[in-house]
Length: 426
Figure 1 (cartoon, rainbow, N blue to C red):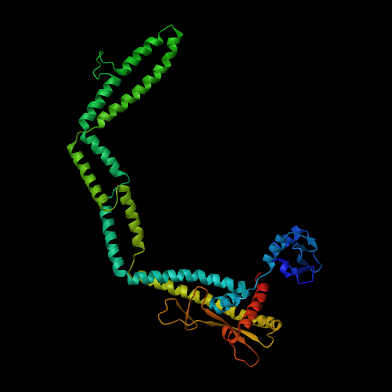
Figure 2 (figure 1 turned 30 degrees about the horizontal axis):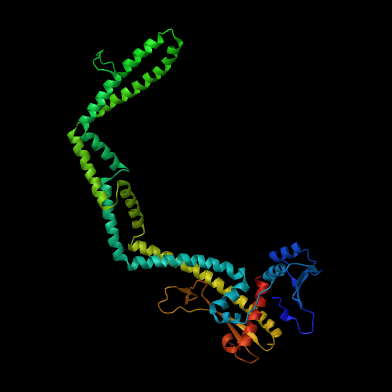
């Protein structure tokens, strides 16, 4: 932050200047190009920030005056700010493992992703096997209830929407006399008397008579109305035919009504127990069949799950071993590079060791995995415990960094790690 208080007494301004290389950092390349900065022959660019005693602030990039925000954007792309409490992260084992994984890059990331995918399935199979084994009695009882319900539903064999159709059919059968009378009278009104009584010609007869009179008229206006009457005649003929068919299908059969009522009673027994209507009963049956598929507690089903668990464990062990090997290889390189950086931070006699050891599984560990005959804990990030050890000087025993280093030394170790990781992970 540019403050006048930063200007030393007797001086006109204070400034900070840095030379940056940014090749390969897409965001930084864009910022430098957009600002029109002059880039040196070695591909670096100089950034400068100054504040004068009168409070005025200036920012330059590659010899060009730029807004202060441009330097802020550039610094976000290229600078990691190291605070005095950052070293506390080194006290966490997970953070130490993250350091080596970032340094190793894809060499660890790829087998670790494969390990995590297989581990997810492995844990799911273990959980299902455990649940089926421990809850076998409860699941067997639930399965019996579901099977009983399905047997009862299958015995009735309802069809979708059948309850609605039966209700309508019962209404018709119960009121067959009234319906027949209404349909018969409507049929006579449309088609005329069945015995050909000329005094009851019906709508079709009246329309036919009107059509005859219009068709023989010499008036053009009247003749033009004839086609519309022809359409009405066709429509009336269709309605009359349908009414006649309806009357013929009406059957005042007490036995049929009794049979339909009995069927309705069977359906109501199902809807009282399983759902509000027949469609809901069928949905319950489908869900019950799906649940039964996951409730198989037979010895064959448990053996199949156990076999799948063991197959996944073999795959998981192979991936875990690959992750461990990649970490061990990266550990030696990481330790050497951190040690080299410490020599420039007034810790020339110090050296860093990075150990990678597989974490033994405790008794009763449900996530235990056997690798090379040893039971290890299969955690979300592999089977390894990673630890940073510090040898303060030649001949000193390697100790965990939080035991061997003072607060200031711990900060320098953290800064050295930041510098090393900057080369491996921008």
